[in-house]
Length: 455
View 1 (cartoon, rainbow, N blue to C red):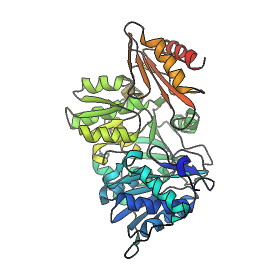
View 2: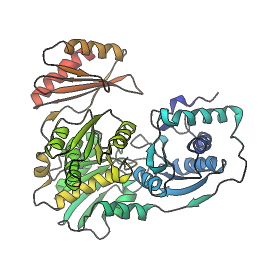
View 3: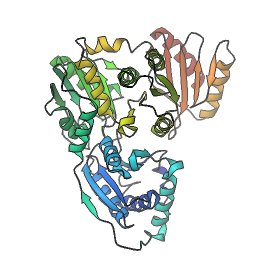
């Protein structure tokens, strides 16, 4: 009996090819998706992984079996798929496993207008219908003609749309090193940043190769930034940009090759959006730096704190009509981009600020980086809930300490230092993030928490 529980995650589908994910599953999911979203047309795109074209075509075959027409966009980044879903006003499916190793693939699905699909909003139904099909029921018969597949290149429209949101034509000349990690940034960056703009783009690993021959396409791992940092220093570049495999996340390094924390990028972009729309709401998740809500408030905005995860961010943005949202993981969400995440648009905002200022990027971002942080620290534990309870008990009774459980356990101490401890959704891990006034404070608080977690 087919059980897709191992590949259906909280927000997407992801598995190993062909052991847990294959063309038969993709076809069944395509048919189920068509039935759940109940739309006349859907848009499908895929990344550069060797298995992606075959899987995407199988998904399209499943969708058309239900009488649904498919706009097949071919190669694209995840935010290009969101552009297609938004601009065409139709549900979409992107075949990618983002930053996962080459043997993985998956599907990110959305409703029309790039609205997210989670377990509660349709993903569980898609899984159930796909399992029924794979377990002998077959793809349900559709009364009427089969849907059609039409190929459409979305890249020119995507590039034009982004360039209409952020005008870089007046920038001072900038040298920009971009590490695409052999991922989809190598497809989208030339269209967006290399056409008639005062940017000297120095490409690193733009060749599309889903085997990732140079390094994993995960810029949050410092080991994967080494080549970008070296090239920035070697060429005297003004800035470095690193994209993940499906190019929906972007990580920034300054002219010294030093990483710019995603929280600082969130604050910088928030200030730009508040200048354009004074008093607007800005979303930040609970692991972003305390500097983010401080800076938003200082600039007349309304900060709203939310749980980690794109579904929560997008839902809160819709409820509050927020103009922008940022996460510690370098996901950036824009109301003007259908509330979807796009690393490219965030990078363009940073480039515009840098291009309008004679200061270096490190000087500009210094004002947005107010505190020291640990980064995410993972601990493998057998009893995650028990360890969480022990940490809560150890801190909750202290004078001046505040505790909340919006997402995991967040504890703030009287001196303003804080930590968040969250259980992984997929692994026996507890994830710890700590922030304090300085590195000494981070080390002290980190060690106090880990002594309990790892006891």
